[in-house]
Amino acid sequence: MILVKLYGTGCCTMTAACGPGSALNWMRRSGHGFGLIRVTRVGRPARQRTTHPTTHRFLCTKTTIGFRQQMDHTIPPKEFKWTPGNLINEHFKLGDHGHVCVVLNRQIQVPAHVVKLLWKNAAVRCAVDGGSNHWRDFVVGQAMAKKSNGSAATTPLEPLDVITGDFDSITEDTVDFFKTTPKVHTPDQDATDFTKAMAVLQPLMAKRKIQDVVVFHDTSGRLDQVMANLNTLYKSQKDNCNVFLLSGDSVTWLLRPGKHTIQVPIDLVTSQRWCSLMPVGSSAHNVTTTGLKWNLYHAQLEFGGMVSTSNTYSTEFVQVETDANLIWSMGAYEFEDKVRQAAKT
Image (cartoon, rainbow, N blue to C red; front, side, top):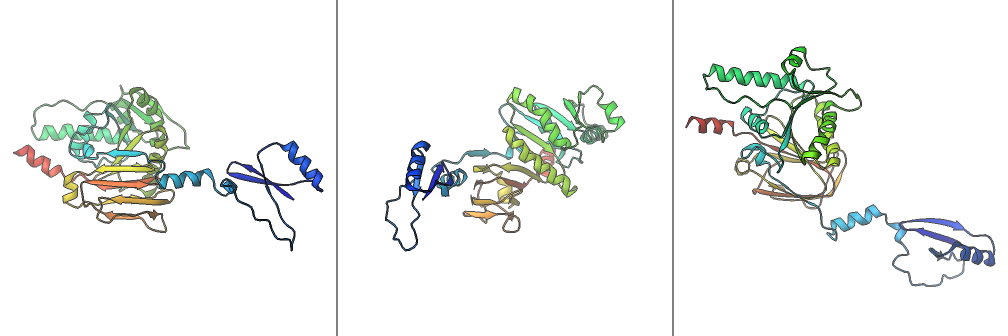
């Protein structure tokens, strides 16, 4: 006789001592929680028994059960709402408590009027190591442009709140330029300067209840640096933080497992700008979308299989339901000419 002890979703098989008496005594000493599975000898017909619903629980894991409940909506998916227009052409401000602006060590390619408005409305402003060189260039460039155009004096850009990094990229001229700005040295070489900057900012963000971070970065740079920035998106989700990567013509952020509603600016819908869903790091086994020109229905996204790129919109509201993390990226920032034309009129 073989005795099987059930441990919730797992099982352990034990062989009792020989003889029926030994087996029964062993069962009495072991207490409750044991189910018996009789293994009959060859040639002896097995006795038919009614199987209790929980007999085969050891065949399912808790993860599998949770996944099935999530997909069957017995557990409602967590819902998220996104308004990227606030980064593109409307308020240039995120969250009830403002946002954080971060300048990475790449050339700033986001349209200047977008940078200035996001910077003005930020609650915290940070440059990461060599990013302070690029921010100095931006500040000086804006001042020179106004002077050459004969523009009236305007309010200068708000000062940096902090510079972080291992300081292997910041120049001496930049250090002198921002000599009154606090600097936090983060020498750890097991993380990128961007990741370390997020760790420095987290306590301040938690104190001020800030959840959104706007990052100026460049997608035309080295692939490893782009992937490192995406990795920081994944790390930041543990702190309930929304990080938006802004480049010259796109906005990128992480979609966590759940149901997402993205309100797309109408200009991007009518101009049929591109958007994409990328399963970076692991497969997404169940992705359903509405509002796209080419929608997905319970699709599996993975590298080496199917990914959704060069898609576009059929409506202003896009919904994405996913069981795994996805990178959402969308084309943006074709509005600078409109802003200039509006300023002239």
